[in-house]
Image (cartoon, rainbow, N blue to C red):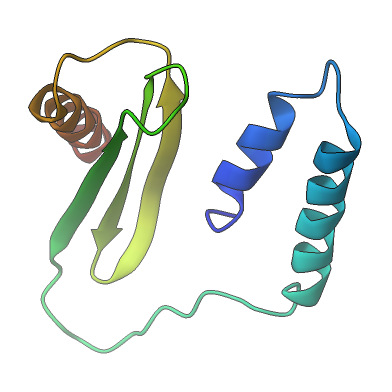
Length: 113
């Protein structure tokens, strides 16, 4: 589920030594999953041209350690077929470099798709 991928990833980073705050966050994620268990993706079958589109973005320097995170989504005919959200330990010198890396990772998924 792409809607909880980042939240679960961040919680998994603290699985070695969780605190009560991490426990509360995990319970909140589980409550969200239960509340949205009947939701589903709907793919429209109207005969339209098949268009490939992709979106990539990065958050540069938001982490305390000055790391950055990025994500992207790839759509074919308005249907989400691939996504990724990742926090990286590499250090970028500026926002343009972080955006370039995010675009490169998105392009790799487009080529694979």
